[in-house]
Amino acid sequence: MKSLFNPEAKQEIINRIEQLSPDAQHQWGKMVVAQMLAHCNEVMKVAKGEMIQPVTLLGRIVGPFFRETLYNDVPFPKNSPTAPYFRIVNERDFNIEKQKLVSQVNEFHDLGHINMPKHNHPFFGKMTNEQWGLATYKHLNHHLEQFGS
Image (cartoon, rainbow, N blue to C red; front, top):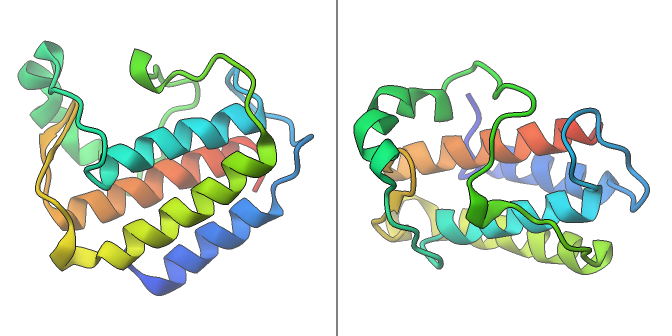
């Protein structure tokens, strides 16, 4: 499993983001490419500890049992549900969101294992820095594959 803390994995993700075009078509889901980029930007804020969402009641109950799905080699299911605060329903500027996401990926990577703030995932609860690196790569990979990148 790849981690966004790994320089090669980080560069791979950035290269794939850079390959996206404003007219890229989703292979599943409802978001257009600019909305997907905005969605990933919001998730990156959580991963970096910039946006704290409380752990949901459902997450407290079942999250720990499913935490491993965030960082194992099994791909996320297509059309998986998205938490309401991560749903992007309005139009977004493709170029702005793309530039932001590249910056977010670099910032996350630069935090590294040591400087990552300690915070909980809003559904899965307590996670180690290593788990954040794996989960963040897996999430970005999922959405880049959604748009053929």
